[in-house]
Amino acid sequence: MKKIFSILAVAAALFSCDKLPEAAISVTPESITLESSSTTIPLTIYSNRDWTAEADCDWLSISPAEGYALEAAAYATVTVNANTGDSREGKILIKAVDGSKVAEFTVLQSQSKTFITSVQDLVSYLEGLNDGTVDASELYTFVADMDLAGITLPRVPVFNGQLSGNGHSIKNWTSSHAIADTLATGGLISDIVIDK
Image (cartoon, rainbow, N blue to C red):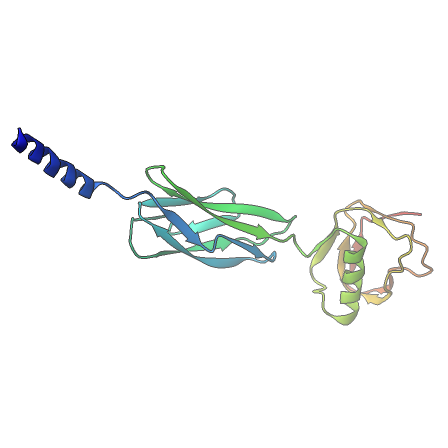
């Protein structure tokens, strides 16, 4: 009887030695906030399980998209496409292949700077044309109506930018001068409804 118990004890000890540790996956950094331009982000991944990675949106990608259980860190690169629209959020999901654990890397990307969403955006755009800090070749687009009550727009002597109202209106415009004195060759102001 003692021999049987001894054999069982040895077997249990061997089994406990072969048992896998609890699954663990982590990623560094866990999140990042970016401007609208395209970029790449290096990730450091720690995992004691084989893993795969995928994005939950079409503007993020990761390479490599899989790895093996290692005691040391693994490294991957996330590619972020340029944002031409509103602010957005996306995630890279790093999953143990046995489904036991998931780590997330979150990307928050600012809206395109070429979207004019407020009167202050419009003022900043016109000031930028005057002082040369705005790229005049880029098309800036209204994404909302503009209420100019109590606001005086900067005067642009020669308008060389590209500005589309996208069918939106400017309301309560009481200024005695136009947006621009002269429209330069190649300059564009279009699709703006003036609603007094």
